Length: 166
Image 1: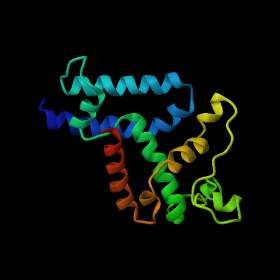
Image 2: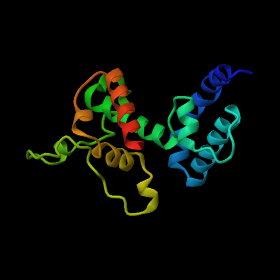
Image 3: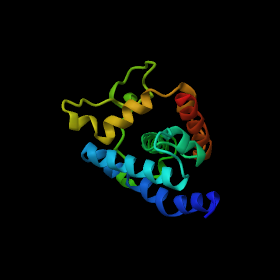
Image 4: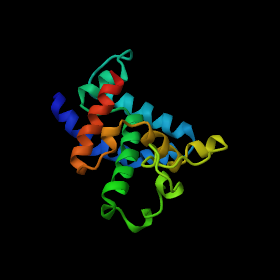
């Protein structure tokens, strides 16, 4: 089969399931996420007919996708963006899921719009969704924290991750 057809098959049958299951694998034991990464990388390698020593960034770049770690971070950022700027797009179960610093501290400061970083005493606590969202979101540039449409945020975030990996 030709390369464009294999790419369409990958995005139709594999990529959607991987993106859907990233959160499950990240929040379980790390071996499951590592297996998912290895499976995805091996599949990209086979579909593109590349050798074993081909880099993951090259494999993902050829199919215009990101690494699974970057995809996970993007999903977390997108969730926080929707929570902060487009809360009506989220189900009611997320109304109190993310806590901003301005709700904890009543005084004005430069980090009042950051996501509140909870305490994680154990390794398991550092894998929690709330801890991960706060660490990733608080490391963003100021321009990515500004209100914008979800489409614009997606474009800006993809550019942010592309520049970050270069």
